[in-house]
Image (cartoon, rainbow, N blue to C red):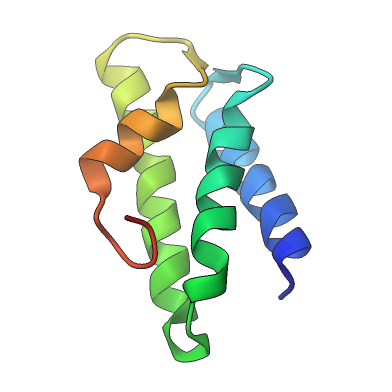
Length: 94
């Protein structure tokens, strides 16, 4: 998978997860997740790709959980950084 494909895939996952959770997504929120992918993509070793994907999903899940805990109906620009702060450090995101 190329970095461009990974960026597109992670946006889709984020938007789908939010939709399934009944949350709206602010326009710039997915870009925060893309930033994580951009920062970590080059460090992902082929044999550790499943671990990297699982950790990315953990960050998405935490963003949903934090929105629920804070009684928010929308994921915003701060959702991904807040989730990342709770979950990280995990491979390949620091």
